[in-house]
Length: 150
Image (cartoon, rainbow, N blue to C red; front, side, top):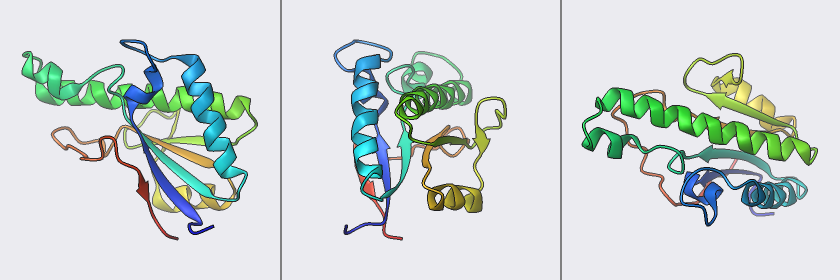
């Protein structure tokens, strides 16, 4: 394989399939199967998941919601998607960890760089939620695949 470790940006909209809103479990299961196929080839995989299928902070802010609050709600939407993807992967036997930039220890681990690398080395898929944890920060990843060499 060309890459040993890959970072994938998965749009939240991809999880809703043909629905106008929310999460289509069949689509999530199909995506999880494709991820499992990658993992089965020995690739270490981290996934940044979006939340646009549930909430768009910029859109809510333009409609009058406080921008920081809207951004935080959008970050929480990404964690919801991350947990959904984690569940689908673990049902297929793929060990997965959700890491977030916002503390929510009951459902996810805090992002710590060395911990993330260790999870990858142990063969776990990492799903990142909550972006950077900072409002007013646009990530600019929308719809692109990101690969990185080890």
